[in-house]
Image 1 (cartoon, rainbow, N blue to C red):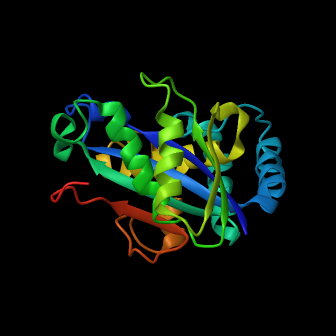
Image 2 (cartoon, rainbow, N blue to C red):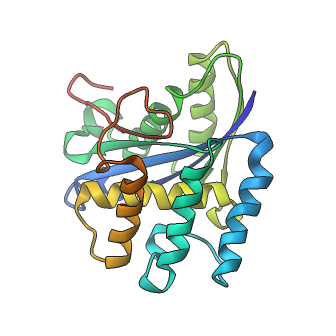
Length: 230
């Protein structure tokens, strides 16, 4: 099976500034490649319903567009073809000096590896798309691909590349879900509209957003344990 993964992150400034907030969240949407066009059509249909044509983002959730984002959440949970995984990192426990040659950027991509690697299945082919950002080391994406390939001899990682989020419905959906999880864990839900979106997710998962079992396949939340290193 050919699969695509669309990734985004929330709060990564805390990797360099631990006072920013407690948790960093890195999340991804998994879909079959054959479903990409339908996903795009369905999300664009929701956007047209509310006369919205711009980018969907957690930071854009507001009372005016609350119903749009509720419909987006409902759609995600209505289809078995979309899956979500997010890794939570407690910034206070990250030691970049010891583990990452004092590079928060290197640590960031190690966590991306942890997000993706555990959901790569033997016999499958993967195209992986990350939200575009400027890196100090231009080989970060190439190195991430190599690490994933070396850990998964029985799967094919066809490409790892960056996209600007406005170009990708998948990254936008990852942004919304990752932002919601980060807001919940950092206790920074300042908007009533954002609170309702989080409650909508919790309605579907039938419990509060919290770390899940490793086997949870639809909405997987992984609070990584850094006590024994990475």
